[in-house]
Length: 442
Image 1 (spheres, helix red, strand yellow):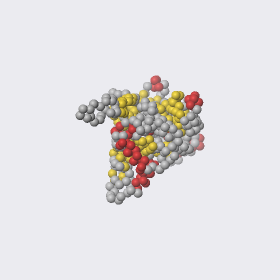
Image 2 (cartoon, rainbow, N blue to C red; image 1 turned 120 degrees about the vertical axis):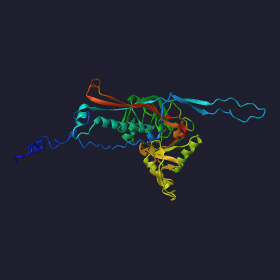
Image 3 (spheres, rainbow, N blue to C red; image 1 turned 90 degrees about the horizontal axis):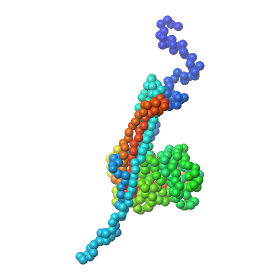
Image 4 (cartoon, rainbow, N blue to C red; image 1 turned 135 degrees about the horizontal axis):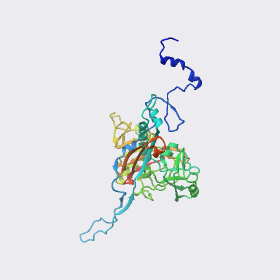
């Protein structure tokens, strides 16, 4: 060995092959302690973290946010008073006194919380060479994205799904189940054998994952749940969804009936203030999206005194609509434009419809979290389409998003830094029957 070899070179040659034979080839590879579990080590791919998740929150960004205000609800005027205004002859009597009809609606804020934790060993090791850096800051950043994504998924959660053998949902992916049903949701059941709603014995969701919603076995026995029955939301633990708002009693979900009691409205009668303006199902049979279906929603909204401000749909229906309007293209110009809705922008489009941005002047926003319908065979159909008057929709915030960090190891009884993000609010709709929904689409 040369006399002038450096100490680094000497150590490198002396240890060459030693650890690969005794400890295996990966022993000296850069590794980092990432998880709370003391037995888990992950190989490091570098400090730059690439997020491989869809974090877009279109509808959440588009809806207006307001302070909650000093109210637990409001009053809806649902009747003018018959005969209170009429012509009066020169010597005729005055109109009969007929008071307006008012209905009280209460809405209370919901709490949404998310947390994370990192052990002090993980925090230290990740600051070393090959580590991921400030793991607490990185986890907080990830939680912030997950938090807003959860908000978006909750306001786009579906209201009802078919059962298959008790409380097992089929035709829905695990991600969809997590989105539509949350722990603490209050459930009702429509029994297709009895052709009746069974809301006398209700139950809250215990867990929702892997395509299954779990409830108490005694509840399942009491309501005699069976394949083809419909499990639907009576009350949500989280935010009310657009789908809840655009519901009516006896909506044909997968060919069976359903209901949704939102805002303490127990009777969702079609054609009244208590239900969505247009709730267009097709008895669990898929059909192609047509301009007529959308036009009906726009017409109903205007007939009920509203004006559509936003169309929300999944990307599948967005492309279907583009193909519908492709034949109507008039090559008068190719000026591309975008329309802003809240913090969101539509996809670039032309004013003549080849690439969509608006329809009849109404901005179109595709959102990947839009719920899908189910067929009578439990198969997943296309995403729903919502035609909304956002003048009557608002995200009311009672307590803005707050971050709390806990480094009290004695209170936690472990050497972990824990962070918590929480807020309190609700999606409020002051006029249900100018909000519209089209379901059972291919």
